[in-house]
Amino acid sequence: MSTLARRLETGANVAIIAVSVLLAAVLLQRQFFAGRSGTDVAPPLQPLQVSSLDMDWKASRLTMLVVVREGCHFCTESAPFYRRLSAETRNTRVRVVFLLQPQETQDTKYLDTLVAPTVERQHADFGRMNIRGTPTLILVDQKGAVVRAWEGKLTASEEKEVLTLIG
Image 1 (cartoon, rainbow, N blue to C red):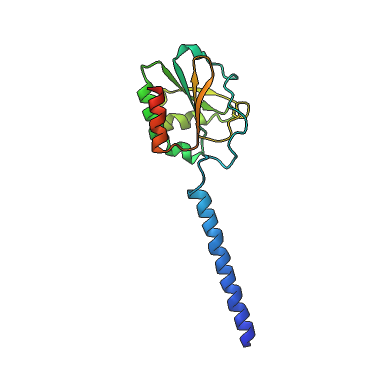
Image 2: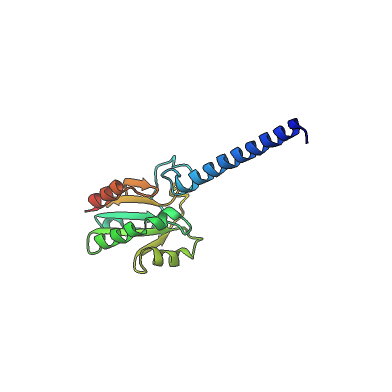
């Protein structure tokens, strides 16, 4: 091979390696360092709607809606906090309800493993509620008004904020 051909081949090999490293970096960043959203969809542009749920908001001082879905790794990573939330609200006037999509019947088993078989659950149309990603926590008052909402995996300070607000 001529010197020019060897140099071109070496240059092409270096370019292929550089593109491969760049692609690997982008994929790793998306997998492990994704933004705060639990899914790859944009945050809601519309206010969250809870009026479509069949709930008696007056039955509790506050209601915490926890929106999860099977396959959401942020939901799975948040399981210890959900267990703590469920335990700390037991025997209080704060109701915790886990929301699942109607078409995902396997989510019931997932929720049993994620938190506990005894947690309250309800199926909901996430699109109708303007929920764009999981996990999402929605704090609702006795009038059915959204007090506060959190999207994505909570930080330690956000977990503390949730527990303080419902305390």
